[in-house]
Structures are given as structure tokens and as C-alpha cells.
Length: 144
Image 1 (cartoon, rainbow, N blue to C red):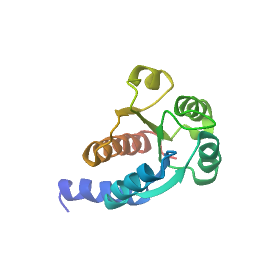
Image 2 (image 1 turned 90 degrees about the vertical axis):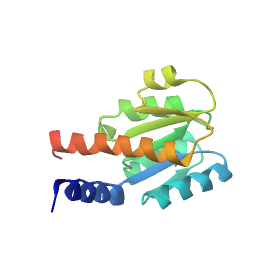
Image 3 (image 1 turned 135 degrees about the horizontal axis):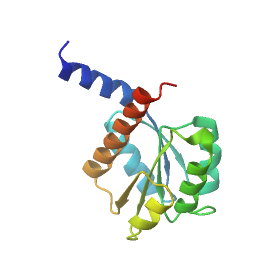
């Protein structure tokens, strides 16, 4: 197997094992995100608010949490801070998105990536792929 084939195989393996928790209050946006992510080969779960997301994180241990900033009960930035402050979540990456231009605030909260709405399929998938490359790099450096 060539190096390119090996890299593709590794990428497909990570994609198949990656569980993405999307925190979004709007059911229409949820359906759109599910479609984008599942078409790309990811497993997707949802939470409609920040408190539910925390419970789902404990239950599911997702690879990536994708959260809108403006979600009820616990906003996306507070959710990000909470995830990043818990050592048991150290391997969970967080992608924050919003129609607000809040990239600096998202990174201050610990976000690994930020996207401005409206999300496009291409940009969402590219960003998730980049985050998964970070997951792969971490697992090579720090075996679990």
C-alpha cells in the first residue's frame, strides 16, 4: 500500500470512528448539518441546548462538539469553557459557529475553530477534517 493509500485509509478510519455532537436549537439547521456531516461519513448526534449538550458529552464522549453561540440554557461560549475546563474532556475538540463575528471570544473560551454563519457544506466539512487531523496528531503523540 502506498503512503497516499495509507493516509486515505487512516483518514477514512478516523472519519468512521468520529462522533460529532452538534449543539443547535433550530431543527431546520440541525437537519442541514446532519445531512452535510452524514454525507461525509460522520456519525452525528444533537443537543438543542447547552445543558443537554453537557449531559450528552458525558454519555457519548464525542470527538468534536460543534456549537452555535446562541443556544439556550448554557450559551455556546460557556459550554466551550466548561468542556475545556474538565480534564476528562481534554481530547474533545470544539468548533463554534455563529452569525455574530465573535471569533476572538470563541478562541478565548477555548474553541479549536470558529465559523461564521451561514455554514456551507464545504467549509463545515473542511473544518471538521482539519480538526480530525489534530485528533490524529494528538493520538500519535500521546497514545491513549
